[in-house]
Length: 474
Image 1 (cartoon, rainbow, N blue to C red):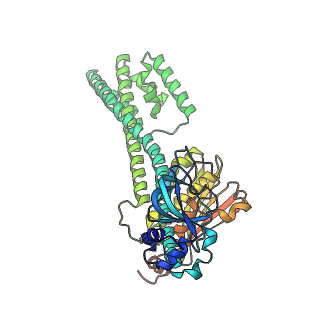
Image 2: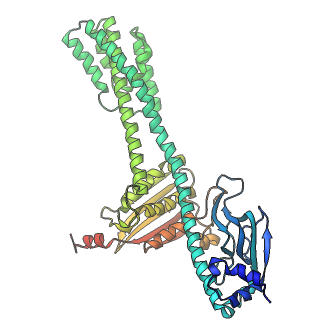
Image 3: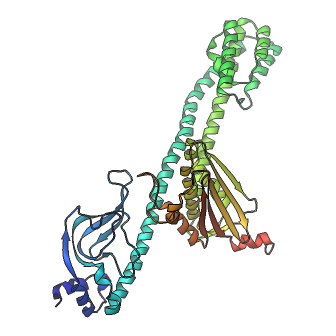
């Protein structure tokens, strides 16, 4: 005879509130109430789930990531009134992380062997548990998506912070030096005016100064050092301060033009003229560096804005795949540069748009390209190819890494499966990448050989842009 008090407790659980009391009595006879203390595991990682637990009191969390690592985090939580563990028709066999008691838990525990006859003996109970399983699976997938997005955002934010720091620091450094050079140029100009030089002499000075008006010549480090030595030697030969050597060397002024200047000017005027030319060239160079640095910041901000679709409503729209790929590559540029990788990109000029969520599609590209970067060695090659095929858009990401071993290919898209070192991968990247492709009525597949692994995404083209390409409308 089932314990009436236990049946009452089961009936108070929201999932079971509409289950006939007779079926709850059947369940009550096949399990027992257990209490677990804080810190105890419900099921150890990767162990087979053997029990169903109706939680009466307490709280437990499912943690993924290795203990003690910065990447350890709680994915989902179980509280009083929920049912966890194995359920009828559930395909989940093992726990992907550590399930730990966070508040002393009391629950009704039933071994999976006791559930085999439930569908025939208790159809209403079975139906309630199946509906709960569907809700639980949906919530779990949602938690997975949110977790992976947060992890991706964390990685992207870290890389973006580094990318923004470099041009921001350069812009700040050059901005601090610009007033110094402008003041030096002003002092030199006043001294030059006081020298009362002829128009021909002034024109000659201006011709030398004009060599720094354009973009700075591209020189190797060795060429730049040799040129600076030559300019310093020239200055020393004429009894001039060598402090201007670096600025003059960065311009396109030739030794011959400086010789002509020395021939036309008295020594005192020559000293002032070289100071004016050097300070003017330095000011222009600094201004150019500020412009270049701030333009880089602008490009990075535009890329992250485009990548995240932060200024768009969360509704589907016709998405420019070429733009999304370009924004994604900007976001991953720092990681690729750190491995001295070459990323080749080729997008068809008439690539049709894809109807969907741009931010999610960009997450798809980010996961595939990031995975390819991880797969190759230093100075490896990654290629991204986007083209139209019939009424579809096909994007291929290819790397020349060692390839995916035959024995694990069947598990590549499994949730929480990863071959990366502890703390380097969540095992959700490719799993969620395929889910994004499937959500957009597409598919994701791969082929792999040593030296060539190709992940191929096929997405249906937007009906409007597809018809435009065929000349049906517009």
